[in-house]
View 1 (tube, rainbow, N blue to C red):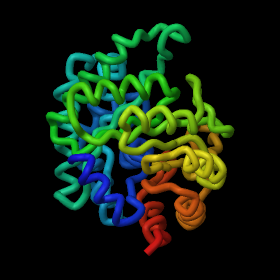
View 2: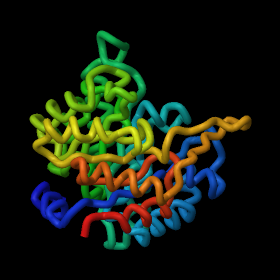
View 3: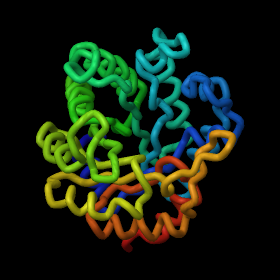
Length: 291
């Protein structure tokens, strides 16, 4: 997909993304504490069903389940040498689910290790981690890239530069933030917009973080700085932790959709859901989109 094609998609109105993946796969039988990416390749049907349900609910872009399919993430389960294989298989599954009815985004995220001098990760090491995964995603046929749930501006910058070094796909950059809009590894969501749009990001925004009811002021502040579309993909409210350690999200689809409509009015152009959401939330969100 070219940046021009991406802009043409946006010109038709707010773009509907998908919702959560991991929590829905666990409901479908995926065990906790395993390598999600490897499990999905061995048990593809729950993912295919979930993504088809998202598309039926209105998702125009679905995220391939490649979230932690980078060398460092896969090392946790001894699969660090299977970056190309797993990313290729996972994108192929999402493309099968899409069936030409939605775009497939190659998904990548933080390593969880801050860059020097705040942490031990070097620029070169992180650049190579992202270059390897992005090369695999592009070769597998991803239509665009989403750099999401990032903890700071610096690591998003490295991921964007890595993408630009190996492909021309549109790159959407999304940061997870605290209530005041600050990132966990430094910088704010407004500073992220200002920095990344100048470096060539196709869209910038926030995901995960909090519920949509707490994001209006942040979205308005980002909109004042934005020259590119804003992406907003929050959780279904703030979770409560059950005695079994499960995160329980109390905001239902209708309330989620109404709060998201407020964020669209505040400037969000690409919208979807993160933790605690499922196809019902995307369907409710579709129903409140501006006509």
